[in-house]
Image (cartoon, rainbow, N blue to C red; front, side, top):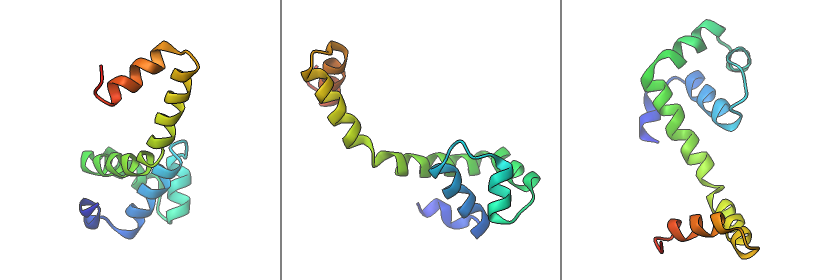
Length: 94
């Protein structure tokens, strides 16, 4: 998260908006954070900004991993062999 410090408040808001709703458009982000759409487009053309977006998305989406793993366990218990394999691989047992 320390890498995010170098961004403006508008950029940080854009990162949060996009990571919370990946289907949001750049125009919607621009309207919400109060900048021109071309400005948002330029931010997303910057590899460092994209990396910051990716890092934040991974932080946010990581909260759902326990649910996903539990769902895979339930599928495996119901007889889904592929889910069982994934669970075993995840826990280093295969």
